[in-house]
Amino acid sequence: MHTQIKICGLKDENAVDAAAKAGASHIGLVHFEKSPRHVELEQAAALRMRAPASLKVVLLLVNAEPGLTAKAIEVIKPDIVQFHGSETAQWLRTVKSTANVEIWKALGVRDAASLKNADEYVDAADFILFDAPAQALPGGTGTRFDWSLLTEHTHKLPWGLAGGLNADNVKDALMQTRAQLVDTSSGVESAPGIKDVDKIAAFCQAVRDYDNH
Image (cartoon, rainbow, N blue to C red; front, top):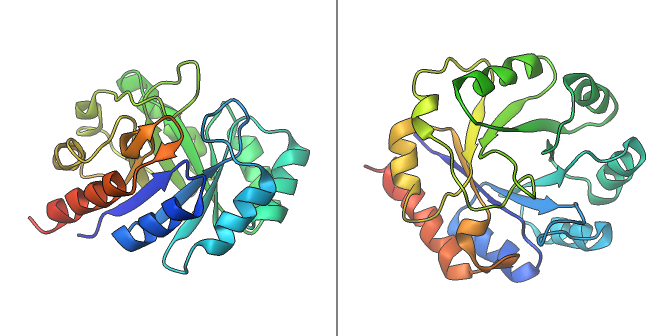
């Protein structure tokens, strides 16, 4: 079992290098102006170029207009686009039909019923990311949801776990959920939007320790 690891909300080359060195499988670049992890398109494109082939690059958008969505994909050339707002399955299908990218949808989990919302994206998304419910911002809040909700859920799509994960709790999260991918942002930061290379390394090591247990 080899759990995939996404380090999200990177803003500089040091963080990209740290994620690659630590063995992450994915990095996330956030283009959403309200986020402390926001990067402009040109900056995101440069970070994308910096990423080695071992890292899949995820562009995170939140309720972006069609024009911005198309431009961001064109400029950054991500491997994956992660939609983190209230985007519909129909919109994801539209993007999927016009852009040669993998499509992820993040969903906030409040209760068992909200897990069912993933089913409507079955033919629209390639992957579902279960996250803590949106607060003032849709992600990166450092809060977690009740992981036990996932233990009885029948998944119709490949999926990953986000929301409040850090080096101290990710092993427990994986033991409970058996997630295929874990996604961290604030859990590897020294301050909002400031990634800590040691925390990135520790998070990835904790996931490997789980894989090897």
